[in-house]
Image 1 (cartoon, one colour):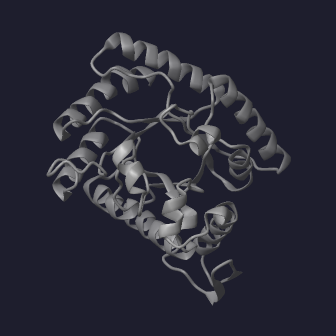
Image 2 (cartoon, rainbow, N blue to C red):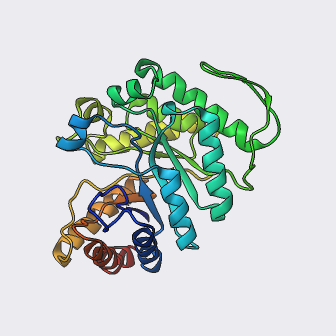
Image 3 (cartoon, rainbow, N blue to C red):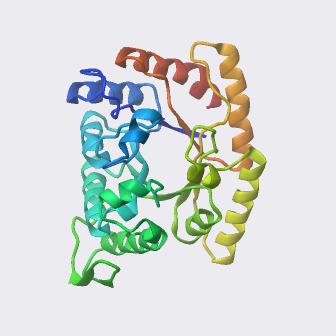
Length: 302
């Protein structure tokens, strides 16, 4: 089991998280603690009502990760997730390839279709075409990273022999987000991994519907994904990443034990990575929680 941990660069507390020095300090703490990857999310223009109710801010993922990459040498960077339909796929391919090349192949590109209709509208993208745009974008990413001219007629573009660069020596692994049947099919068909989430009461109705309902439900989904990959002749490494349903009380060894048992259940189901979001009332508290997690959870898993 590997760990991808939230780095709270979206938190707008003045001076605490959104400075170059703060990102450097947090990234170095994650790397020193032996955490495998850090993650950020993606919201270019979220709904204000959602944002001020139970939403969350987000810096541009690729820009934020450039600062993380510069401060570290081993820590991987995981977009959790990039909403691929928001952008022209060649722009996303360029940003991801640039980060992959300059970081020494440390990017994990988690992608999804998105769920916030008003954000699609602000960005000039048809919400109802997001599935088709996601599939189209995934194809373009692979073509762009393969090197050489690309010929592809898309919904909103026409590449007639254009040549995207840089070409990464190693393409970033693509993890497909979402727990729906369509997400499972897409992950089996074109993904290097699958990163669903457990449904929660605080989520929008669309996200609750797309979420995994229980560990038993997760097992069913993984079995289906495995069968689909086998049918298509896809073999080789494949990651499954999901956060535990069991909450973790930082500072409590008893809570850590219950959390470890939940991670064991996930590992038995086939999960290879788990996402973690430590409390961060301050930057110092975040760093202390990272260290506690490394000692009381990660070290005991390994």
